[in-house]
Length: 481
Image 1 (cartoon, rainbow, N blue to C red):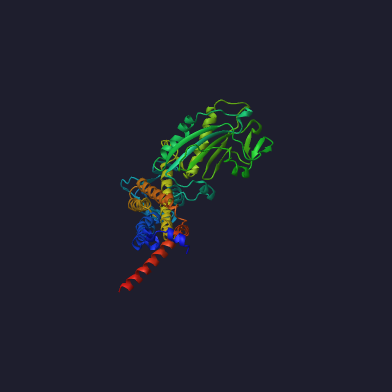
Image 2: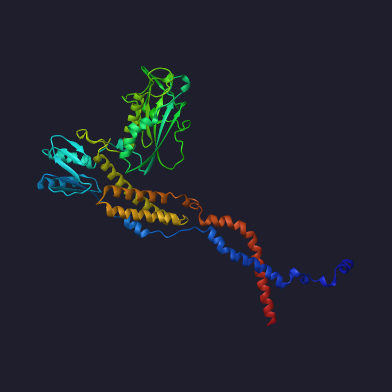
């Protein structure tokens, strides 16, 4: 030791233990304060990093999804014919699809609101819920009733065109000019008149099933993504061309932001260099894109810009759009041998609307049960999937609506459909709730991997210091004894 340096240090500070922060009491207090802070912060850390998983009514879900649904279809024969009604009862029960229960009565049929009256007549005609048909051919009578009550014998191609059920749809009507600069274009159209004449009456009939919002637009440059094929009479579109007709990269077909599914209806005006444009091997100039919308091609009568679409062209276009909308929504067609009474002013008969309602009811009820079953299965498999209060409320609300559907299926068709749609919407909203996705793919192992490097460097020295002080305290205590 250097004597000079030794003399420079005051005698009272030569022992390091005499420094205030090296005193045992202060040192242990500092170490203890760190651990107290960590212990007090643990509940907050656990609360902020834990996943909220509220209990789900699993037993109730499995009980509800396994219950069968039965929608009664009441048929009334005004003529008192017990043998015919019993024979019809047995035959129709075997031919209608699962989920429908046919009840045939004769004579005094009562005053059921949703009952159908089937009476004998020279020709087949429907008016409201009344059917007039010959009774001399039993097989023909049975086939007629089945085709009206459950028109399920539709071609598979037409079934795939139908859009998935939604309580709300957006209808987007677009007037697209391939290239207005060539001079062969339609600059505007009276879309309100076309909707009022051809579309709105259909929407009024479908109001019990869907809510619709409408938007429209006009584009003056909508090029195609492929080269057109020249033909003897102009230009042609093949079946392969129709599948890629829509140019999603350059056409802005939807203007409003909404989660509602959109059905598009496009009136396409070819440019002067591609007029006339027709579909090869087809008598129609319109086609449907399954579950998406419809397209109608309008070849202008003469080369040159048209300021506004003519009334004849407008009526033809929106008449086509109306037919395409009927197909996309899955509205069944009346059989060719059955006429609609002139006294029925609607575009579709009550038989068609009821058949669509029953089919959509069975579809939404099945979709609800499948969604609830899948949700419970997914929640059990993924322990890190959060289940918050809004999700649980939607699940319970869907179960309540499903229970009301079972109870009202035999009383009111419209009310039963309202319950089935409510149950379907709530179950879908719970299944696709965005709050479940944040931590869905963040398991506990990832949490440890994130926090371990962050806190290990600070906890290890604190742990070693606390262990050393505990060991020193025990030694001091033993020496005192």
